[in-house]
Amino acid sequence: MNAPTALSHLVPDVSQRPVPQALLDALVARFGAQCSTAMVVREQHGRDESSFQVPPPAAVVFAESTRDVADAVALAAQHEVPVIPFGVGSSLEGHLLAVQGGISIDLGRMNRILSVNADDLTVTVQAGVTRKQLNEEIRSTGLFFPIDPGADASIGGMCATRASGTNAVRYGTMRENVLGLEVVTAAGEAIRTGTRARKSSAGYDLTRLMVGSEGTLGVITEITLRLYPIPEAISAAICSFPSIEAAVRTTIQVIQLGVPIARVELIDVNAVRMVNKYAKLALREEPMLLMEFHGSPAGVQEQAQTVQEIASEFGGNAFEWATTPEERTRLWTARHNAYFAAIQSRPGCRAISTDTCVPISRLADCLLDSVKEADESGIPYFLVGHVGDGNFHFGYLLDPDDPRERTVAEDLNHKLVGRALRLGGTCTGEHGVGLHKMGFLVDEAGVGAVDMMRTIKRALDPKNILNPGKIFSL
Ligand SMILES: Cc1cc2nc3c(=O)[nH]c(=O)nc-3n(C[C@H](O)[C@H](O)[C@H](O)COP(=O)(O)OP(=O)(O)OC[C@H]3O[C@@H](n4cnc5c(N)ncnc54)[C@H](O)[C@@H]3O)c2cc1C
Image (tube, rainbow, N blue to C red; front, side):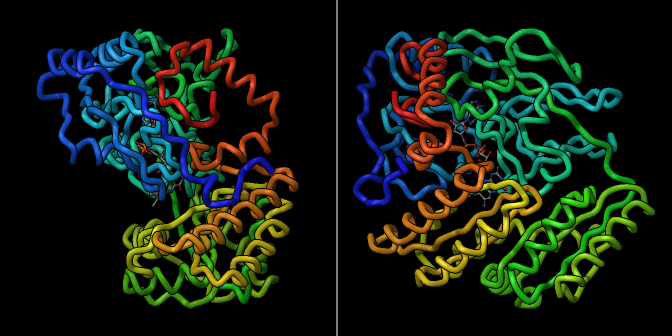
């Protein structure tokens, strides 16, 4: 495996390029109060949810239009200074850190819904719109956008990390739901990729090249997305199990039988305890599956009955229903709060989140050995998973001042990724590579494929100014 576990190798390679005063002067002249060099603003844009510490960018530009983004990139390109796009800063793998210095472009003010085409089930938004804002603003159309990472991320950031969430088992990820983009290139020019049509055979698929490129190939300024009708009937249920294995085997069978379940999330007993305490709930302290069914009233009932029968074969009990919107929100809020509940359970801790994803038939093989290793390590942890996709996250809760704990957790992750790759899976199902998984990418894709990625990067960004030092080194 290329990814090192020794702590000394996990300190990011920081070599900041100079940011000339002439560039800062030019940015202030062009952007006025939209450009800040205040330390507090720079620090806020120079960290994410990862546990790395890196000096912040030299300035932050708050873009309000595609023209602003293009001008900021063009100025940075003139001075060969790095540019790091910023959505809401919820990424987990060191994506935003200014390891080679440079400036941050914050797209949060580009937060307008540009057009809703209800007849075609599409919407076009600016990159700074967040997923919750989008769903609130289109609710009256009877449509919704299903991708829901646990944080209220920006649509631009979600494109850049190829995000998914609890609904991906039914509706897919950003890869399947982005139809077209407007992107500012490394030369500071805006281009368009894709159309509003459902499909196209027109040339290279630049949309999919940009989705998941983590700010290294262009700055996304507009996005056209697919929407879905709000289902006629929705019902949610929780089911407790005597063991994680029983919950996982239930999930595998549900997926293999082709039940079109909309959400199926695993929560281990540690996470249930943390959520109970944090949200003052009284969930049974056993491993559980949280599920949701979408469709016609009869279809939903039929799916739920099939799942209930499978769950009872594996000892699942206490199948509890949440049919009103308020009950469902309470249940899913508990799931979405699991990360914050876990952080609060150990004051002062930082979490390292794993993100492996394996083919569904190998889920039990991958998960159960890793649970055993985590239990034996003595590191406090929680486990949650979008298990219908074969994707799960251990969150190891570390004392940031104890290097031993960090080494143990990295070692656990190393073994877990090795296992996932041997089983035909990936080191990252949805969070992306950033800094933390650069070594694992070589293990997964191979030297030849990573070299092809480098060739694309060099062709599109010859001065290496777009979020340099992420995904792979040049
Ligand atoms: C509690 C919690 C739960 C989470 N759950 C999930 C989950 O279930 N599924 C999931 O997929 N992720 C999850 N995440 C991770 C995170 O929310 C996603 O990675 C999200 O897509 C990041 O969006 P953002 O707006 O915060 O982007 P940022 O963190 O601001 O940026 C992320 C990366 O994208 C680049 N970028 C941002 N905007 C643009 C743009 N307009 N153009 C080009 N590049 C850009 C940045 O340079 C950076 O490399 C979770 C995070 C937290 C804290």
